[in-house]
Amino acid sequence: MKKIIHVDMDCFYAQVEMRDNPSLRNVPLGIGGLPGTRSVLCTSNYIARKFGVKSAMPTDYAIKLCPNLVVIVPNFRKYSEASEIIQSIFHRYSTLVEPVSLDEAYLDVSDAESATCIAMEIKKAIFARTGLTASVGVAPNKFLAKIASDWKKPDGLFVIPPVNVESFVKALPVKLIPGIGKKGQEIFDSIGVKTCDDLKKIPHEILSQYFGKFSYSLYQYAKGIDDREVISDWERKSLSVETTFSKDISEENILQLELKDLYDEMLSRLEAHFDEEGEKKLKKFYIKVKFNDFSRTSCEETLRTHELEDWRSLLQLDRFYTLLSHCLQKKGNAVRLIGLGVRFITQEEFNPVQLSLLPFCG
Image (cartoon, rainbow, N blue to C red; front, side, top):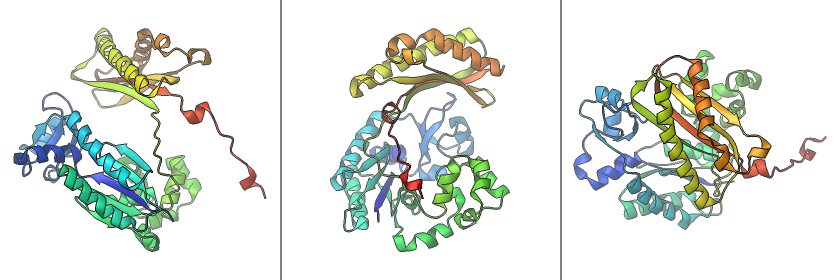
């Protein structure tokens, strides 16, 4: 039986700022773009969340919900430094560590005698080294460990032992399943599904009509099953950049000027990424557009076989201009945001593994 730990730092960016400036500890705090810049928040502290302030919320709207909200521009250098310390602590206890972001990671400690003791030690070590609190979940798989880490936030520790999995999952609200957003919740409400016990009773063919490939995972989660491994060697699959304009832009020639700046930034980040990890073959390049009514569209181009070798020559600015034109033709609204990026060919795609059919033979 596996023993998986999920560590999630409590409102990480905000907590770092509150640690470094104690005057911020008792005020509603948001980390993100300043008001009037049409930016969004990365996160907020728990005082602000009581007013309904959430991550990815436009800063101006957050101010309407919480007029006394203090907003600080994020300092990613400072957050990265804290994250490096935290990650080093994880590696004291396991060689199988899967970072999800700067403030979140899975650990496989299946060989340890007590995963709960390790979870307690990790919490203490993080606080001793950084002065920050973490919420930790312990369970037999990644799905349940993530659910557990959120169960007693902030500064929580929750354990789901194997013997309790069935009863715990049976009563678990489906809205807590990772990947279920507002639309997913609306679908479940429409078919009368409230808990994972309800979800188990829905025929898979019906579930797949609503959720496609994700339906298989949902069906497994409803039974408390998750076979995903903790992957320590993470491979980047894409790289992208984007910008939100201070004012909506309708003119394509002005959008092209903005796109040029993004294009230069993307090439610079690609160079840095390839210098660090070695060059990779590109599979696609794309552009996305968000209009002033918040609707979105995107266009992409798949590269032909003979184009896979030299990424510098194929990522021509004119090709992104063409994709931009295609996006703008779909809708005549003014544009709020544009982004562009590339997708890499993964090692799995480059060196595919032939799966055996023997397990399916009678």
